[in-house]
Length: 325
Image (cartoon, rainbow, N blue to C red; front, side, top):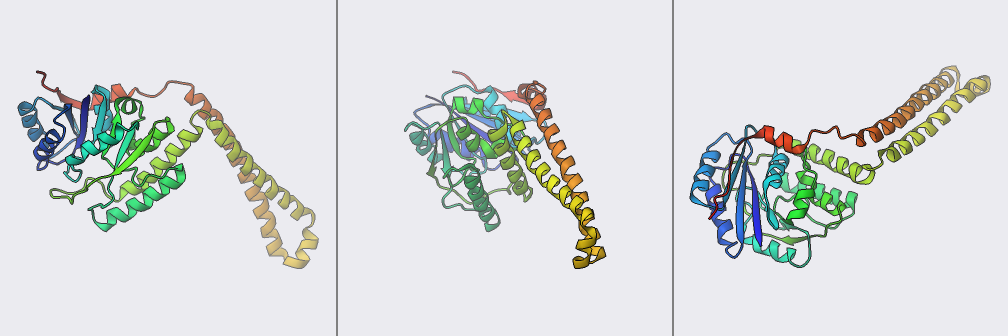
């Protein structure tokens, strides 16, 4: 079995050698390649990786010219690797290389992707609590029973890695997209260690980005092949409410003298104006929804996107290949 371990790196100079040695110790019986992607580190990470590449034939290094984010770091690695199984993990030594055989054993049971569930997560509360809320929301939205879909510690078959949509910050949605493609997914509890060096590369902004990623994934998985179905329903409901409000405004004008005796002139006039204003606004919004649906249908029928291969070529500054025997 050819195993490829992919590790995005950003300012992790103190952990890289220990992480590599741990991986090699716990994968002795496999043909293993370790791919580090230096995502614009500003410390000595690339110098350390260059040294590891010179000393270990299993090491391959990709370097971005600046920080492009974890998703594109993974996409760059997935694009250029070959093998049977891919393991992704973070470079901060919080993921334990000793757990890799456990992930591979679960994969051998017939699954296509296995998540490392950090059941006893060793992070501060301001990271663990929002993460649990986020994972619970994702489980409800997409109807799965996994505890931690946002874990960076995963094992998957190569065909899964090659088919995943990787853009923006879709590394959070790897599991959801794999399920949407029909792959079998499982999870196993894994050890998680406190951070020993440096600091987390993700701030509070990751939470609203995670929500945006989830909504985008939900829409694309549910309506990506026929977006007009979603926009038509939205336009129909909005237009129906708008027509009701407009009718209420018309009836208010017709029955103005009678209604005025109960509500008074000002309140009756306000209700009529609100009826007409909201009615016209909602009808215009429904027409806009219909047009958005038609435009979406036209867009998905055109290959207008920049190929991901071309984008990665623009981002890579250098590539150190794995040494061959």
